Length: 229
Image (cartoon, rainbow, N blue to C red; front, side, top):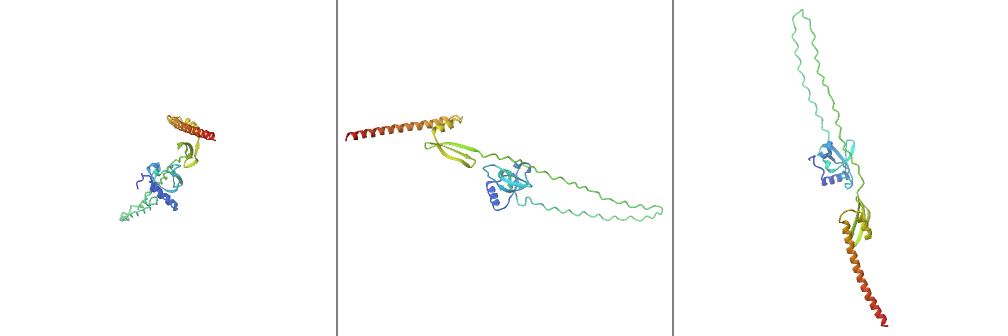
């Protein structure tokens, strides 16, 4: 798998099912994760994606930090396992040196052969590379949404924080709705509300005139019935 691609929706669902079964899937960090790209970690938890984009909690080394799906990819099989150390090849043995021929000069003293010292090879251990730790972004409170709506001749107000409903829609008076809209300094909003209220006012006046006319007819009929006694 290309380490530059993030986790797809189906891969996130597969990880969620693996966690539910008690497994901890391996993932590899993509280039979006910064300096730790290419390293392998284990997913230990999936938090709520609606609260934060970084809802995939990964353990790598001694750290447990949240990441977004774009920072991760499914690790290929065998990733993260220790590679068996190659056995050093045996050094070739030097052929024994041919002993020098004996000298027949009587006056020449024997010179002891110089001992050859093997060259010392100093092994320097490289310090382990420090892992770059991604800064954890603090999680802020969920957003608050207050909705003023108009439908079927009624004004309603509702409040919601994140995915939790704080107040279900309840009916308010038109005058209260107009006060709420007056706080929003957006051109056209207050005019639209006043137009709705004007339409409702005109319809109410027409209905009142109709009821007055019907009431006048009923009172006239009642007067006629009284005179007929």
